[in-house]
Image (tube, rainbow, N blue to C red; front, side, top):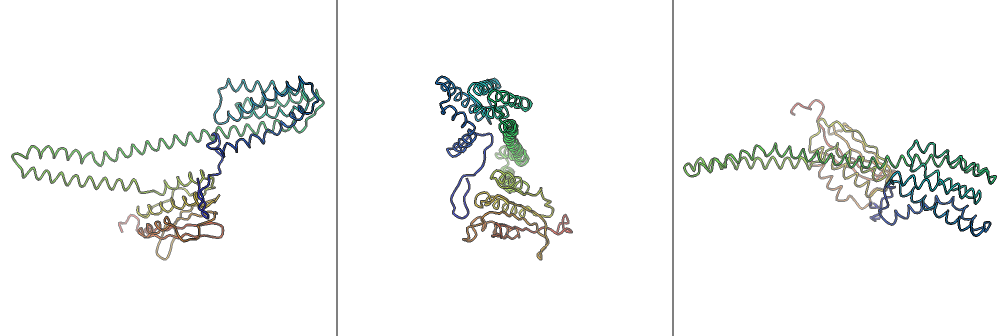
Length: 396
């Protein structure tokens, strides 16, 4: 879902979910409309049946055959894409189409040659590439031979059948690749989560393992000393308190580090978020953060996250450019982040809470924030100070 910057109304994302079924009624209607458009080649067989040129038996047989053909075609193509049938089911349905198309066209007339278009589409969409490369030309040759019986040259259809068939080969490859990429992305996310859990476990062990062992040892010593040497036991208890306080400080610092966003992570998330929202993204590679304090990097990462969130949710943009570069200003060297989109910009009622919070966060890190409309969109610029080249690593 996205929210319009001007009206504040929430609207669904207009995206094509390749290789997946419809999630709601709107997506179902879009798919049904897409199917209906491609059924235009059935107009000639339907008109031929309704013309009354055939006997009653031929009309009834043609109607039954046409219904069986359309059912098999729709079941095969629009159910098989994204959720493939077993090879046995695919071959069975394709065989039914391969028998019905020439049979109906041969017995009822040249108006039925359009069925070969659907046969070609089915071959291109469901068969492996190598099998499709010989089955589509074979369907074209059969159509040409059947057309000779009715003195139908079918020049346009003769060209359309192989073209649309091979186009569907490409569409099928695209769908299969998209499904595989979606699975790969889920696998990468799971592996990243597992790696993060392992890192957290290692850090907690390093932080608390020694401290807890020391606390346990000193507790045992204090218990042994308490009856005969209360003064020494009190010293051990004081040591336990000191160790536990230090462990608490270490844990708090570690948690703060986990919560602090990083520029590299936010840039990767930016690419994914903008692409998923249908926005053409221009994102730089991982930057050189030499001389940039952790607090400054964190503030810049928050600015990037907020800016991208606004682009996805509020702007209505279809292009966004993110730039991260070092600049020299009157106040010294800075690392500058620029996020520019071609959307409608803000609502014109002043900065929101997000930009206000970003301004305060950047000011704490010694940086600045500029945001506003430009000629063809909206731009946010955040700057944080960096150490001069001569001071890097000098301890200044």
